[in-house]
Length: 133
Image (cartoon, rainbow, N blue to C red):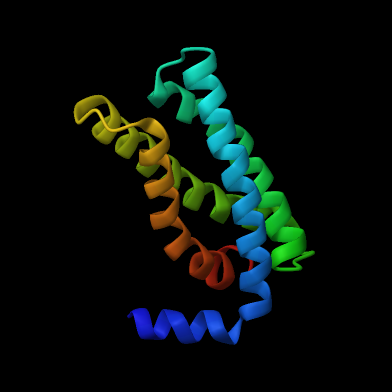
């Protein structure tokens, strides 16, 4: 599977670079808002992830649709597909944050970085083949 993923990304490297740039800027927004909400305002990290994902999901959808994947189709079907993918990622993020931060006591920033790294692997393929096809 990793070999197939490598060749898929290599075949679509320009889109992947754009996706990566959007992802890195989204990462900065994600970690920045998590830090501000949890460390500065003292909001529980699980709740902070719930809140910051509202901003990050909208940001990532818009930039990936129009810039990374140059897609100009009407967004209603894409919004549904993206919503399903974002919902799965959202649940995954919240569950991992609760489990690793609240149960095991791992710092919320480290948990979030690990979660984002995992989701990045499957999101590019799903965006390309399912959401923005």
